[in-house]
Image (cartoon, rainbow, N blue to C red; front, top):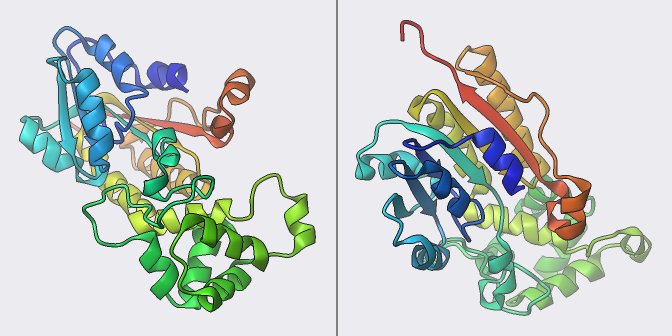
Length: 290
């Protein structure tokens, strides 16, 4: 949804913009082009490997600054860069195609590999630890809350019985064997898809990071600046919707679009992963007396 993001974020020359999930740089190059000649793009990512690849692509652009950091710690990056405010902020949540394609990252059961799933591989908690040490009740809660999994309890108990589960393909097999065959045949996605999503969210505390970001971001955006958040999970979208609406009721922001912007049918056909994408936007209002 590059066109929609650019339209609603609306970067202009001379502005300072934060990309909190720079990743593969899907939006960065176009934002940089629109900030030239004297704007600045602050690029953050938890994935050091992805950030290094992006730096190799865009590092020669003098108006790009790179930070290995969780986007919820954006205020520290602003301090390091010498800025108090930004004129726009973007989050593109979830896992990237590159991360899914790397078997050793453990994000996908399509590519057998170790159960890792960390965005930042310097952190301690891995998917293997979650799967093999968390009690069944806690696993079931994760599958329900983060994966909307109707058979969360059955799957959790099956995982506990199958321990140790060390690899992505092994976890997918356990999940598939735990759900009713009739239900499985009616689904358009593999039964492990939502379980993997839920474990990844738990490993990386993705909802917690989003809540922390939303606690702080409007205090760091200049009047007229926009915050654009692209989510692919109904739980994340719910958090963004409620927090944006609360900020609007408090007179902190206005909502240029009340309902989320969705991908076009053409984009979904070209990129099926975009089908669940939702873009929400909030524009910072002037504070009283400003």
